[in-house]
Length: 176
Image (cartoon, rainbow, N blue to C red; front, side):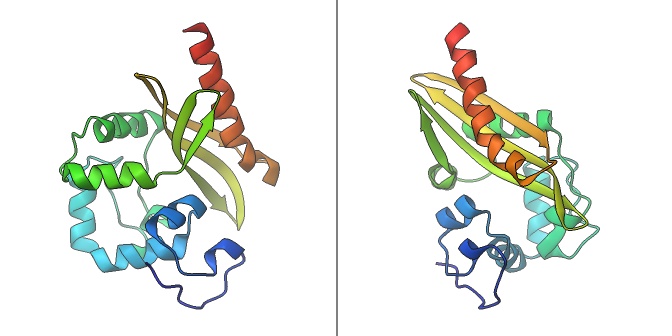
């Protein structure tokens, strides 16, 4: 359990204690900030390097904001490569920890397809301008890894990340 610091947020779901599962589901930035500070700069840099995650640069912002405002960048293709390593258990962490992370990543079921994914949003001047959904979809023994980016021109676009991904997965498997 990660305790809420009591500081009110505009996102209502953030204003309570969270587990890692609920923090992932609601993208509770203050929880991830607490975790980053607990990990510390040296260990965080080592994890990002060992995972070969994007450009591996955690500088440019305080540690508790490096992924929000700092120099860290990752392309959609790099995200797919990272997820391929994650799913094949080819990361320098225990199998148990990988299984725990797989279990807490939000999941949605759609017509026989299980989609496991994490949303993200990039803001500029306090407004969202880029959204993404990164994850994998399973149907039986088949797995497809994806990283989808969408330009955000209105709040409605944020909700479309899941709908678009569902539609694409259905189409891939309908013709595949």
